Amino acid sequence: MTHNHKTFVQAAALTLILLTNTHARTWTSADGKKTFEAELLAYDAATGKVGVILSNGKPLIFMKDKLCAEDITFIKENAPQVPETSLPQKPEVKAPEPKVEKPGAAAKSSLGAITINPKELFKKHDGKPADMSKPVQVFILLGQSNMVGLGNVRTLEEAVKTKTKYPYLVDEDGGWTQRKDVRNVFVMCSGNAPAQDQHNDWLCVSNRKKIGLEHALGHALGNAIDSPVMLLKSCIGNRSLGFDLLPPGSKPYKFNKETIPGYRGTANDPEGKGEKPPGEWYPGCQYDGDVAAAQKVLANLETYYPEAKGYEIAGFFFWQGEKDCGNDAHAEQYKKNLIQYIKALRKDFNAPKAKFVLATLGEAKKGEDGNKGKITEAQLSVDGKKFKDFKGNVATVFANPFCRGGSGNSHYDGNSETYMDVGEEMGRAMVELLKSK
Image 1 (tube, rainbow, N blue to C red):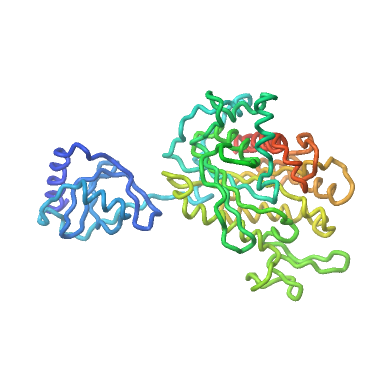
Image 2: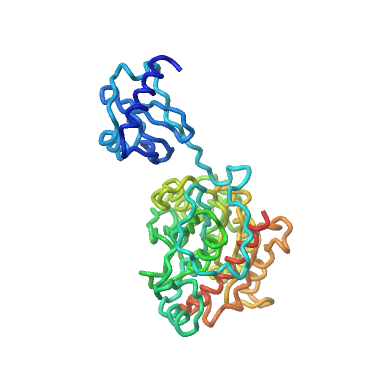
């Protein structure tokens, strides 16, 4: 350590002793993307240099313009001044840039072991916030209108009050439980149009007229995982896997002598050039929009999960298929498209080990004829217990036993119990997959 640097640290440490309001805090970079923990020591207004002590006890000197505006204001109001001669003359050391885990980047997930008793998967929340020192475990919800969530809260209230179902949704005072360890985020876009925030709050039924799977999923995952959880829903209704949600890597194919374009293909160029066809709705347009909308949320993580320290993509949920039933080619190709969809999502979110849980069409029975039967069979066939490529990382929930009338197209007549029961089963399936890493 140079003489000037030592002098600065000694002067700063002395002033620290004289301060009663100085303590370790979280600092944020000017672009808002990076944070670090440190204790403020001193500031020289003439040069703009700031002195702090990191959580590992090491001193650090850097320019104040490396920090966000809020931190700069804090420095000016709280830091003691030291003489310019006490500051080190060598070039300033840059503030540390803590590693923010990119989805799938870690060699080993920080999720930790999941050993919860199945009977406690839907116990009442203890009200405690999550351990924010851990990365947020992100679960992405995708599909069409029933994933959007169209269960009427009125029917949910009836189920809770008169049938005593879903007691975990209600707190000790009889109000709707709010979980401050599970973030409920929903963004929606139409194709490549700009996405709009629908929800960005803690998981709770309050102020909702409609509910979806997330109100069951969130409690299962929140109780099973000792880390902050985000349910990130990115979807819109009336979308087919065979066209709107067609994933990257999908090739053109023949059906009844007609050539069906592949991902980003056109009638004149079925193979496509890899670029988005300008000025038109193209195969995969909604896939591109849903992925981009979710990625934008993750790029602005602290806006959607306050105090988050990075994230990991832990899993995907998918509930879809109604629109494909109306197209023979899409129904015939559904299994192939679904397999590619799972692979493409894992690639685009850099999450090769992320688990994937889907549910079948609620009204469809096993062995049913027609397109509905083809799609149901395709959905069941990709379950890891049947499809070796997805062993231990994909599970299909057969939703028919939980359908209480109506079809997927009628959104199960708004019966919230269908959404809650399917959600519970999908939550159980995801926890089982997470237990078998």
